[in-house]
Image (cartoon, rainbow, N blue to C red):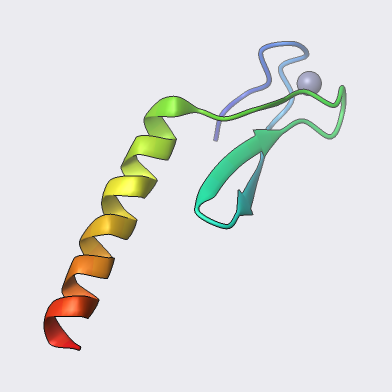
Length: 55
Ligand SMILES: [Zn+2]
C-alpha cells in the first residue's frame, strides 16, 4: 500500500477505465503513480493480446 505524501495516510486505489489513480480520503490528495500505471498498462496490453490471439 502506498502512503499519502502529504499526510501519510493509506492511499485508496481508484480505477477509472484503463487509468488507475490513488487518492487520500484524509486530505484529498490525488495522483497517478506512473510506475504502477505502466505495470497496469503492460498487463492490460498483454491480456488484450492474449484475448485477441485466442479469440
Ligand atoms: Zn493525505
